[in-house]
Length: 113
Image (cartoon, rainbow, N blue to C red; front, top):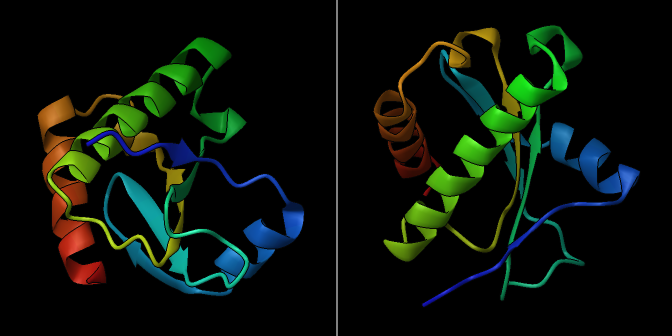
């Protein structure tokens, strides 16, 4: 089962997600909210890495890691497709191991259900 990760594109979607609920950990903050105009066939998720985290290569590496983790989570169906998600990375994610980030995200998505 291959489900596509669909990124948010409109500024109003980002603003409305920031007013929704959130879950934080030492690596990232996850904002989530049920947006009425979004389809449940796709996982609506966006990843944000700020410029203060590092250069473009490092920021893209963080995004690739997060996308990989999310695609693995979708396969084992731990994610609620009714919500749209916004993940904002923190500075501590730079030196973290992939396995540690994955375990933390799995625990956070258990809280979201």
